[in-house]
Image (tube, rainbow, N blue to C red; front, side, top):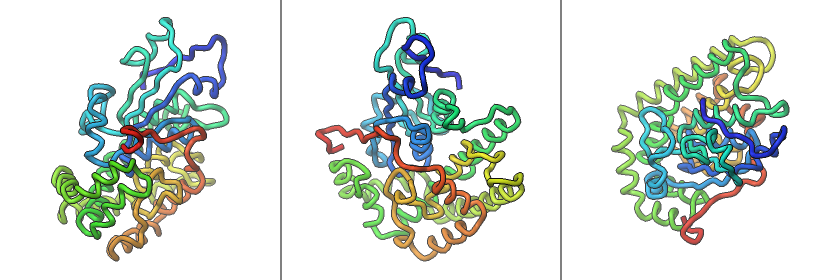
Length: 323
């Protein structure tokens, strides 16, 4: 990560002082597991931020003016979320050269880049970095991040959409826009036009019985692989790299949480349907994954490391609080 932000204060400033000099705005597809990565990183470093939450496809009008900013992950569109904007509360000419592509602010719309950026800028002795100073360990962390982004992320999304959009009652899919996940106007639009949105998502993401079955098989094999990694680790607390929580654990838990029944009550940053609302086949698969070492590790990461939203954080709305 080459993007940096510089402090406007003279002398050495504390981590809290540095955070206070910037405003943080995060735009998300509210229940997306990739977006959960960015939320978790902000909350982990106790960075207050405003989260603007959207439903799939509803996010595109709001993201239109940001489409040329940042660099989305490979394969993602210019409308990709999460989209993090870091803006100095006060600026001067001498600090502009280190503020990223837009002169006085940093914009990132790749979840992995966001986690790395926040760790580089805001890790402190009291809040461990999500990466390692040891080059070999750090390479392992980055390698696992990339693996999970590729081998888990897309397949979890396809499997989840298959269950919600194709195999659950319509009310379950519509409920994703309720429970204060988004503003009232968005919730109403999602509910009224749900069938159209579902049709578009199913075709755009190529969700069908064959692709979902393949994704389910890949997920199962990936959980088996992760379990072996955890079981072969050194004595002490079971983490993916070394004996401490790292970005590898955070990414695994973020992407795999909904597979093992994690909800907002466990720390997930949005409301998602409860396990009992899914069909029996999905409940059985969830129970199978929860029983693995990898599944238990995900649950433990939420229990020990997720916590709540960073103090001072809030939700952003537009259109008189309706969007």
